[in-house]
Image 1 (cartoon, helix red, strand yellow):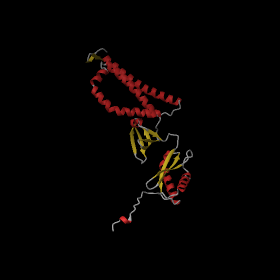
Image 2: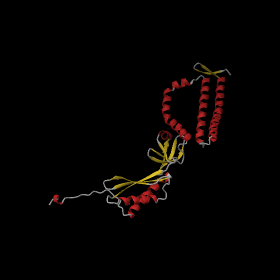
Image 3: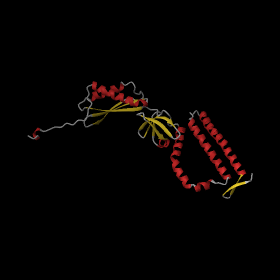
Image 4: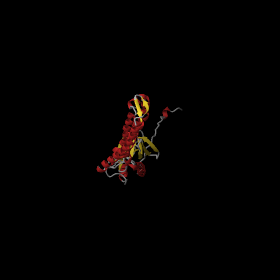
Length: 279
């Protein structure tokens, strides 16, 4: 067992030391599997006791981290038996480690961000979110990226770190209603009382508006060619915002036409003085 095989620096490697390395690596293999099962089982148990929905991928991520830690310790012990110290390796490969660190920076950030998003449950598959003024429906939250669909039906992939570091509005999870706004301008010779009455009756007849918030009609501006009104209604289901916005504008257009109220458009009146015209 003490037969020398080769030397590494001041440490002589023997048959016994090689067998010890094999034992350490085999033991590390079994311990890493046990650590993965134990950590995963622990988080599942905690979640079940607290009545929290468990995300299988998130639990597996925690188990994988535990397995990596066990392997790191096992490999370090095996290298120490062979007379190789990690400090020496790190010193010799310092530049390589620095370059690898920069290369893996984004990967690690996305991995950690994905774990945080899954653990906090602030965003889940099926949620409608707004990020950087973009409306998105979340399809899947992965370890590195989030898959989503835009309002135009385009599939996009977003790194988890961008979502974790950005201001995200989750429209699905907020409890209050969502506002739809329309702007309309009428001619200056319109009857102000008739305009307000027509707009208020129109929005109050809409069957799909929320009962939690009453519609509003406000005169907001004297424009160059029109008197401008803001009409606000609220809906309970934010996913219906786009078709309901169309329904609102069509209802306003039809009501004003039926009432004989002119929807103004930009125009320019030019007055010529006959006395100044060339003869």
